[in-house]
Length: 160
Image 1: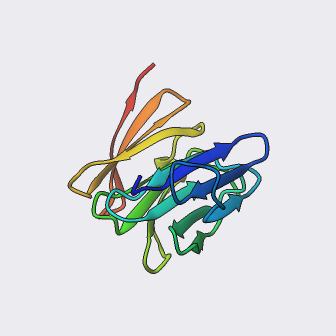
Image 2 (image 1 turned 90 degrees about the horizontal axis):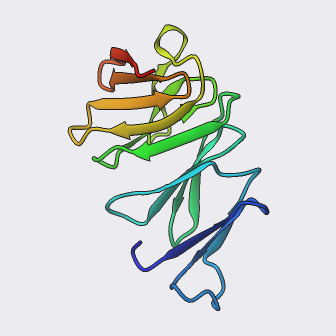
C-alpha cells in the first residue's frame, strides 16, 4: 500500500517493510516481537497497526519508523482494525475481551469485558463506516455488536 511492500515471516517473527516492491533494497524498518497475529494498514495514511502475542498493540508511522505502543492487558491481541475516521483502533483478545483505543492520546476509550466479553478468543472484528458500531466474532460461536460511543453492547447473537 502507498508504494510500500510488507512481508511477514512467521518462523522468525519478523515483519520487514521495504520502500518498493523490489526486496533488494534495505528495509525501512523491521518490527520484531514474539509474533504478530495481525497487521492492518490505515485506510488513508502511511500508518501500520499490529497486535502481538504479548497483548501489546503497536502503531508505526511508515516510513519515518516512529512507533507508539498500546499496553498489554495480559492476553494476546488476536485481531484488530482502524476505525474509518482513522482516529481510533479496536482490538480483540484471547480472553474474549474487546478494547477501543484513541490513537492520538493512546487512551483506552472502552473495554468490553466480563459480562460484555466473549467466552473464547475473538477471531474477527470490524467497524461500521459511521464509526459508532463495531462487531466481533468469537471461537465461542457468538457475534457481539457494540456501540463504541456509549461503551455498551447492543446485542449478542449465537451463531452455532
